[in-house]
Length: 141
Ligand SMILES: [Zn+2]
Image (cartoon, rainbow, N blue to C red; front, side, top):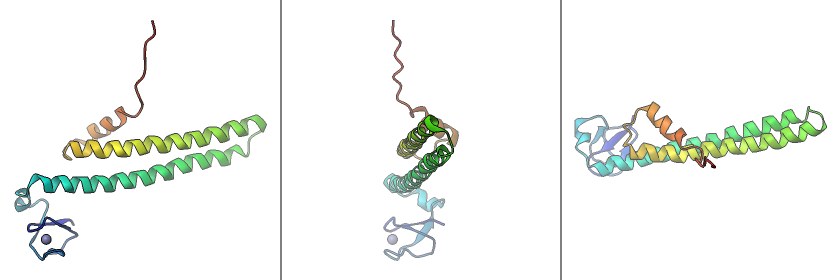
């Protein structure tokens, strides 16, 4: 349970007294906590956002590597020209999976902070995924 210090605004993991200054701790849902300045909440969100982004970037590497290595392994069982095609394709797919998730992580954190954490999850997801690919669809003629 996350508790916030009324005196120095340090975020503690539970307890009744602040580990930094010994001040009174309140839960983030407390009316007393609501009276804290907006900058406190902004720092909180940046903190949470950075942590979320880090987890997602780690997952991105993990998922990307899994996709790439799985395809690479499968490619060894195939005949001559296809084994190479699948091998290269898998590595490319793994890299683009990683890149897409990595981008989504950075974007998600930004969207989340800007929206002050009050965005509906569905809308947040849409905002993230909408900007995935560069839109350079130009009509000729
Ligand atoms: Zn404190």
